[in-house]
Length: 188
Image 1 (cartoon, rainbow, N blue to C red):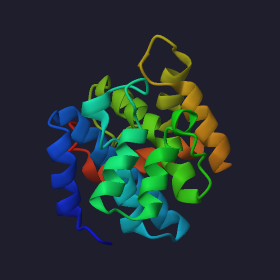
Image 2 (cartoon, rainbow, N blue to C red):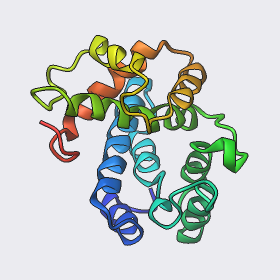
Image 3 (cartoon, one colour):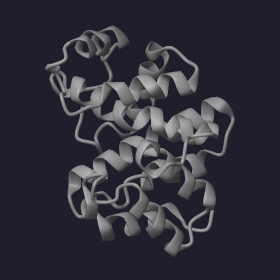
Image 4 (cartoon, rainbow, N blue to C red):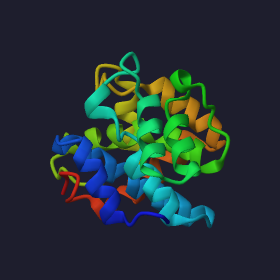
C-alpha cells in the first residue's frame, strides 16, 4: 500500500469534517476488511477502498454535483492505487460509468448502503448494539419502507445480485464486519 491507514484517514478528514461521514467510512472499511478476509483477498486494499469510497462526499453530496467522479479524481491526484480508484468509481457506477467488475468493486457497491441500513436498525433497538442484532430483525425492518427511507434498497438489491449471494448472507456479513468498530461508529 502506498499510504498507511493513518495517512488515508488524515486525507479523508481533510476533505470530510463531519463526524457522521467519518463514521460511515469506518463502517464500510470494517465490512470490506471482513469480506476480504472471508474471500482470502487483500484485507488492507479492500479496507482502504472502503475507507476512501466517499472521499468527495462533503464537497459534492450528490451525483449531480459530481459524486463519485470527483472522488476518483481526488484519489488519482493523490496517487492512490488504480484498484482503489476503480472501486470508488464503481460504487456509484450508475453515474460514473465504471461498472463493478472485480470482487472488491462488487463488494463495495453492495455494502455501501447496507452498512447504513444495518446501523439504523441497531440504533432503534433497546441495546443500540450489534451484539444482539439478528438477520431476521434487519429483514423485518427491510420490509418497512418507511424505515430508513434514505437508504436505497434497490442499490443493495443490485449489489446482492452482483455478489451472487442471498441478501441474508450479506446482512450477516455486514453485522459481523461492523462488530469490531461498533463503538467507533456510535453503537453499543
